Image 1: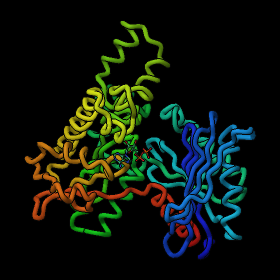
Image 2: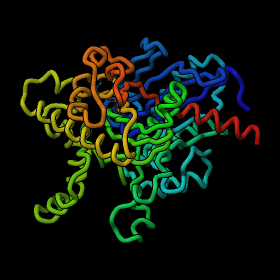
Image 3: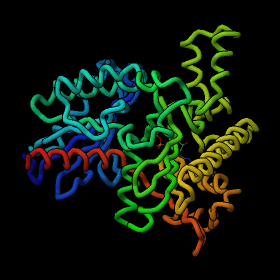
Image 4: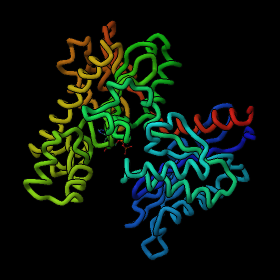
Length: 400
Ligand code: ADP
């Protein structure tokens, strides 16, 4: 049973961080507190803020006693939350889980069987899934009996047509789960729902969403449903990212592993951690640092990034048979005016143009008045999307 004044906790456990957001249930979930422990395993740092962004806690452990693992880091978060919950009950916990595999196309209540299934999927996302599951295990231990809900980054894309979902390999590979899953689904779903609330006619049309953050991908949506995405089997595919390569000719990997004799772990480190904006520039993964730098490698990295994102907008518009709106979201999409303008350069053939004043102001609509294709900027909210899923699932199971 869920009551007004109950709280929903959302956790997003990554390789070295646990992010949290606490929502109050007041009809819909309302965000109250958010924060994270980052640097788990190295130099942990805990920060918590209220909904207005005011910093309520900021802690490092220079004198020892630092949380050594995810379980201990979650302990730090829960101890802090105990102080602000003021007797309110945590009615459920929602978890961001990167991979739901071919079958899990909607959020699920976690039980022993689901946990086992999610563990089996870990080889499909070795850098993310084990940490997501460690977060669920730690939360279940700390909140016994409280429903834990897993929400998947892949779920929004599960209805892709086979043509978009397959690689050009013999069918047994597809049967073994080697498919183009797509990720960032919680972000895309949030944008789809928001557009449907704001402008149902537009949401019913053909929309390309560019989620450009540290991780980056684009999604083609028709009628609010994902038709295709730039990410594939893993979150490495598609456009270049902060530290990830994005799409790369598979022949390059054969060359590195075969001819050059690189170890598998070194290639993995290169593609996930030392490629993309950071690897190309040799300076930083952060667009702000690259925009501020006068090093030509910084300019080149940004040029390549914009080029690849523009290409993918064109490819996804082709997948949709046209485009009614392009939506920019996530850290780069929401803030980096110069990147947005450069991505849209040359897309006039799709009716895409950017109004310089609107773009400079990060306005919600940055295309000129009367443009054939609208270009929008929207803030994404993956945690808010998870909280809504948790509430929907609890309300459904109460009725059942
Ligand atoms: P994550 O994938 O970690 O959630 P975000 O969506 O928060 O990432 O995006 C973080 C990235 O957004 C930063 O690395 C930086 O490149 C970019 N970014 C954030 N703010 C700005 C800004 N004001 N101008 C340009 N780029 C920005």
